[in-house]
Length: 113
Length: 117
Image (cartoon, rainbow over all chains, first blue to last red; front, top):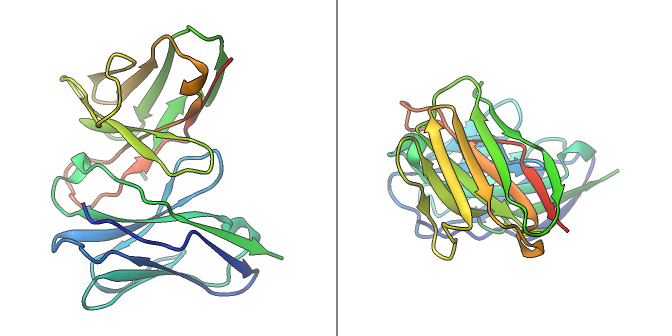
């Protein structure tokens, strides 16, 4: 399984755009890149997933360059409630429900007023 | 969307007690579920893969006799921490995903906070 590297923590202010980059140099050809958000004392929550280029949903965008060795989660106009730990994980596109997830350290995003 | 439920959300018990945690998939059948443990200010650590109708697969370093896993139905997996001690105090989280579509993300329960006195 590909190892990931993320900043341990980031600080931001309300209303700013936040970009969290994850490095995954040895990502496999059939790996998707998946991002989860975790609040204290809760289980992780799926945010977004992509394979290459750009993916956007109602909460975030995910940018993946052509070499796929990194990815950037973009959160537009963060609020205090976006304070959480964010994890990126490469997940194989085979196996489906049997794919086990190996979590890295994650990035603690602290949003201040 | 798919939802995974855990029960109880927190439990406090005396050392030596066995504690059972339930993980249910509410609107889909899950032949595979996963159990994680998370210590304060640390990441999730995968403990085991729960397989419906067969033995669980444990990660290296996780004692199978200490953490008993039963997956007797397609919607329920249980984790029993046997003879729990203070060092077993942690946040236990389960996950599952809908079968069929290989790109379905894992959905996580809200975790169980276990405190052993």
